[in-house]
Length: 200
Image (cartoon, rainbow, N blue to C red; front, side, top):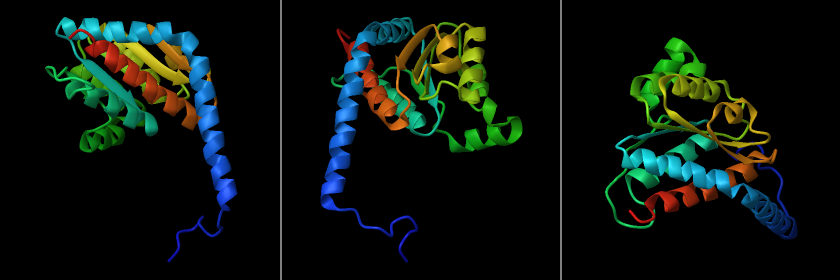
């Protein structure tokens, strides 16, 4: 049985146009974001200094941003480009039993804040990733992190929303298209990982 939504063929030239349009928009947004490189450097320096002091990174996001949070922590715990000791980093998106329990008992707005409260300590780094900057669970987790004395970084899209205003370091990708913002976020995560590893 054919899945719904796949009933119409797309012509090869139309498909190729989508590919070209996607790449052109991606490149253009990357170029626009170059002007905000200082925030990316600051975020990397915050993470690097915290790790050097024996602290840890807690990262979180929803949907594609959850995958980006896990990508970041994977590069830190494993390796990005060179062999080194693993860095302590936890994706608060990865434990499905915990996430569903917290959502059931406290509401989805608290799924990250509760983990920040349980796992975070002053001097740790909370990295919030949100293409809108408005997700209630992201905002709640950043507020909890600030209250506990964690250093806070937000990676956002659009105008940054409340998440951008709450974070000490705000990396903004100023675009309304979620897909394009996520594409740039992963590029910037890679840049952060390279800076963190540099000279290690």
